[in-house]
Length: 73
Length: 417
Image 1 (cartoon, one colour):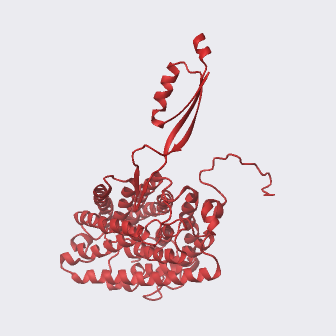
Image 2 (cartoon, chains in turn green, yellow; image 1 turned 90 degrees about the vertical axis):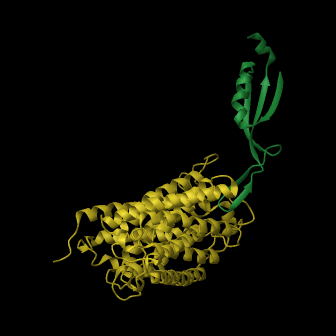
Image 3 (cartoon, chains in turn yellow, brown; image 1 turned 180 degrees about the horizontal axis):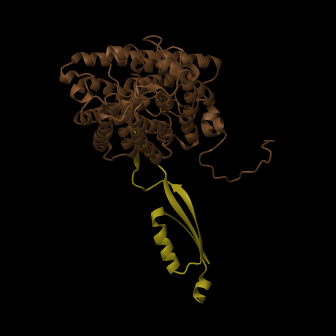
């Protein structure tokens, strides 16, 4: 059994899940987190207020991969 | 022959009254979307409570002060507690309906001020303020322009309330923002709107309600109402386009809050002019009005004046531009002889408009200052810093707008121990 922790962009979640299920991954947990680093600069304007969003939504993907059960199928 | 009641005029005013009443909840959503989630209910309640407290003040005293006949400065007490307000004709509609229609204006004008004090003013003093303000400041100014007072006699053109409603509310907003003071986080933290769709919803409903506000001000189902209606449609279209183009030039993005603001500024600006200028002039007026308000809004955010939801930039600047342009673009050809503007030969009209603007600002600023100062002597206007931090929804109302209900334990008899 392996434990993989990945932090991905929310809009990629569906693709990642599809790939994982195709690879016969048995169980996983996701949680919504926020992070900083590596993103393109996100500046927003609300009337006279201009802000730079320094935290971006991410999905933390926590999956255990049970090799034996996969093989049995 | 006694004046008779017109069924058509009555029908239109019945609808208009309901439309204008709806503008106050709409304003609640317009404002409520622009504050933080922890203050959403409080901001909505600042508008909703005006429906009750200003509405009652209007029924008991306000209507008489505004539309009584005592003098050129102020109405008398003849209509106190609706005495003498019956089913007889007032113009071509029943007197009670005229009273109700005018009441919806008092309610929304008081609620407009809340935009300058959101997220920090205690709710009790706020309610006391708007009720007193509607009697001491709004009702006399309404009397000056519409109740047979001196500005009306001077020939000031204010079709639906550019001075009475918008410049008046903005002047009061300025005083309130100064006296109550800035939010503790103002200019220190980014304060972001909690729900921009609410703001767009509010702007849309305001536009719908504004047809009753402007076209209803013709006080009948007639040509003047049709002109005001069309102008209420056209002016904001021009403001919205110019505002969007300004947004695109400045930030390369057409913002949604900008669109909502542009619509409201266009509506504010056409209010005094609605039944007095041609449809093409209203497009010109709407387009011009976008520019000063747009930059006033940007400038205000860089000052220390925490007029949180920009009542001055939208209603004050927009109202002044609209009132002045009424004095430029008014055309007897379209307004049944009410008056020509500077462009059509009567430069004096522009001067009269300026007098109306200045008189409104002076009286509103002074009257508001007296009320707010008196209230601040009796009670704290501001929430405690800790309460402001937790949000006014909990500290003033004991509720949350978006409670998740996690960890909530049921207290069977409401005890807290």
